[in-house]
Length: 472
Image (cartoon, rainbow, N blue to C red; front, side):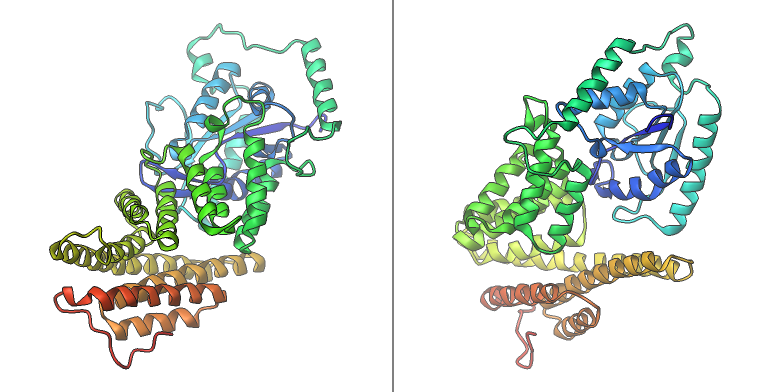
């Protein structure tokens, strides 16, 4: 786009874990809601690494943008080491027009007091509409100011006043431009995915849509393509594969059940091994591994899988105390109480008690999450939102409330609080939801019922099923 200013955005993509807080942040929402609209409103072309159409190494194009882009916006949220590294390169290459932003709960790993950072509030899986409006206005003001004057914002050029910025020779520029045009016109190389020339961001979006539609076979193919593109031009694919891409491919792989359930689950675990599964502190990775190991136990009966599932869910629960990890931990503890892994009656009692203690925590999490989601929903009702945005956000709130009530129902059932179970299930059923969501709850209750009928007498008071209890 000749004559048009260009902004390169340095940040991760997809959902990433902020290790300081354990929260998962959707960085795509940050980019699409907070950054890209502001930049384009100023008449500046905006691009992120996953939107670049390229052939060969991604790194070459990234370094080129860090040098030549008129503006760079670096989002340091989740303390992404690549973002910090790329920001350092930009500061070394260009004296001005670099804007640094981050999510406001980020704990910086080293002293950045000498760098101006504009912060925003991210709720993890969403960003409030009011915060979108506030931050867009603030970032717009910063961008206008940066474009209007050439004052050093790089600490390198601030402290080393006589430093001369590097530049690429004209001949080299022409050569690279010719190579880029030739690569763009050439057909895909043998072995590359047939993505019809789509950039990485589009392939990822299509993969996420396939997952949301439960088309896991298509999702698997799309995320395999994304992984190949992400490792283009490198000799170590494992080192460059993004954790988000690996997690989504692992999920699609095990859900696809191809060529069969056991093989798909085993292959999914092998994918997660790329993320140093035995040592990682990423809650998303260990939670997914726990779910896969639980499925392997259910399919094969091999108790080693159950043992590992409990270890992963325990790690996820301790890393990030939330409903999802707590529900799975409690359930797998009931599984273990019914298995030969418990050698004594005392061990069985310990697991049953620990499971119910965890369910008490689930009810606490449910209350917390319900208050949070209804607060955000009420705030939206008092805000003038475009009709399309309102429907999208309401669908999100409905889904969140369904799962809160589903987890609440399961916890009450496990605790033998059947009236509370029925009430929570009825409330969940009253919310607009896909059929598979209620089916998932009912299948879980049926499995839990069998476990508690077998070992519920070990509890004090005993877990005794009501005769009048209706399962669905």
